[in-house]
Image (cartoon, rainbow, N blue to C red; front, side, top):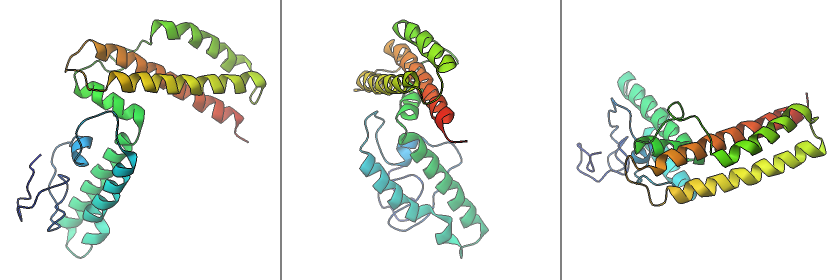
Amino acid sequence: MSTACPSCGAGLETPLACGACGVLMLQEDAVCPFEVFGLKEAFHLDTGDLRARLRRFTRLVHPDFFALEGEEAIARAERNNALLNEAYGLLSDEARRADRLVSSLGGPTEKDLGSMPQAFLMEVMEWNETLEEAPPGSDAMLQLERELNEHRDQISEQIGAALTPLPQPGDESLAAIRQGLNARRYVDRALARISASSAPS
């Protein structure tokens, strides 16, 4: 991204707007979510800093602040505000952030490589049996929920370690990270299923 505002020459924290003069930037193409927040690509982020940047940048692009500046300015603010919120949604979600990094580094997508780690598959078979057979709220289902939460934490730690520092583009390790993300996605779906089955009707 350009590091200086084309209007006033001040340094830019985000490609969406200038914090010095308030001018909105026109973004025709998709913008990297890390770039939107003025951050380097990395798996580990300071979530407090991310929220602070969101509040600061929202004040620069929120459509309410451009209500008197005409339809074009409002439309640009709406687009940039949407880009900001989309970027925050991705960066604040650990799994989506890792998915983005693997893709940007040229690693396989879920469509390219839909398998999970081999060691994980036997456990998946057992978990699926419990999901199908155990009544909601039963001891077996509660135990499964604990196991799945533990595995989600382990998978996240492994993915974080594999992405710190970031591998080189096209590195072979990206395939293993993709498999870890597939396993994480299975766990998240299983936990959502347990939560839905135990929710009061």
